[in-house]
Image (cartoon, rainbow, N blue to C red):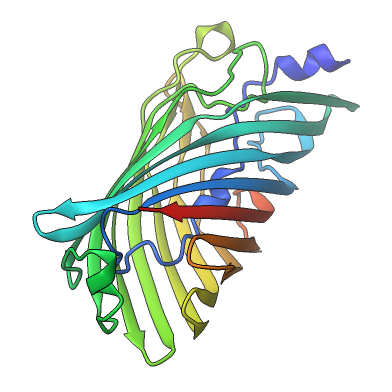
Length: 297
């Protein structure tokens, strides 16, 4: 029965990206010449929308696995900037009803790799840590470019793959506005995809850009100890196979919470949870994650 699940002409799915679309404190002032290494464990669970022309119902995916990341802060044109790179491994467990029969597959593999460059062009003068800690918080405006590299495991015979077998480019602009112990963050982005030309039967998969508007309300209990209430609205992303439209994507809302606690000046932990609030012909996915980070100079 599992072989039938290979034949569905669906997009390779990686739900881990939902955790990345609600990302507080991406545009805050940071000291330069700092190194960070982190580890993450993420679990996602949810339903995946398919088009009426595909004979599959009740498609659900559970994905979990560890990830690792490295980040470095530096000066660019006199302002604080950051480069980060992340990747990992994931196991996916999917099931659906196909032509009246329940089919399933479990698969593990390496994920795609994600690289990002952040440049804070307003309100974030580049400073060493000793100078930075003496400065009050100010409004920061910045921009970033994230690139998704198709390094993940992919086999065109299967519907479900860990890797996407295509690149994406995501420019974003965002800001951070502090007021007392509170902070308001907002960002807008557009994600552009290359084509996947290795679907079953050598078909070509295309996708329109996905647009994302996110906001965060953050409360600082004390330095290094904060909580963020997150929300975003994303839309776009119509899909095509060999030029024929397969799915119309409409706007979707997500909400979540991020809690971060600094154990000391070098170690911190973070807990993340988010879920779909309103989903119209999109993926209704719940995400939970825990992360640890270590900083050195």
